[in-house]
Length: 358
Image (cartoon, rainbow, N blue to C red):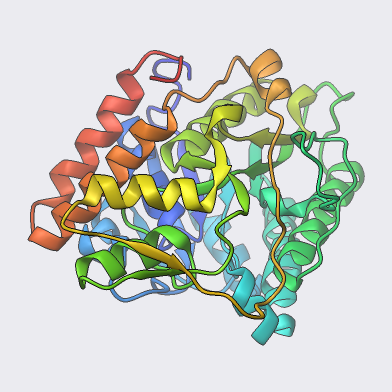
């Protein structure tokens, strides 16, 4: 990231009360940005947003991304130069239970955020966050690349593939394409399986693990052999910020982008939870729960060659370092330690770290 770029920049983050949104607000504030957030209340109890008092770190507005009039009012008041659209229904298993809401939030919510930016004007760069699950999963042993076919067997993954198509249509119809010289840079980003301190969502492996370990229970795992591209939450956020800087300067970067870990970090769930239990200590353990479960892809990997070659972005943290930071955060939470200072130190250390995984 360019030194000093974010100082004084007006930034709007939708979904800022969520796990990734909370980290992004703090990261942007660390870099000197003027941050505004638009979101529903924090989605979990507890929530990182509430535990750290992140409401005080930004101009905080409660609102639904499906409310176009409210969005336009907020965009008009904030006059953002950069927008990060994160607000979503983010859980695969929930999407099976509430498919209509999932599509409504993830597809029409994206439409309305982009429409508010189009109608109000003044935005220079928009980064729309989707997911690594937006690709049609064909069980490939290789990482998915940006030109690969979009798809999704479950409502969440499919809704995010639809959101990708929305972004592309708005880029082609209203905002600048990569072959145009000026205007609004609009890009979509697909991150790997993001982990780190502060995630309390249900049916995610790390929150489920630390909840079980903290209560001296055995963690139950449905798909121990499923392979995912695990990465610390700060890694894709650094990629989003780097991309936004490029978009601000030139719409030549107005495309889809993968931000994932190095290939060594794409490991089975069993490998991940074994390392987590070892770092947690105290007899932490897990076991496989057999039987019929909702569909989940067996293998998912991302190819990050494009981000590395065109943006100069690469992950900084090894999987072991990622897990160390994650366990450090949750153990501090369990002890009642100062999470504000700990989180800020992790952000500062990450920003100062060299570019190669360590």
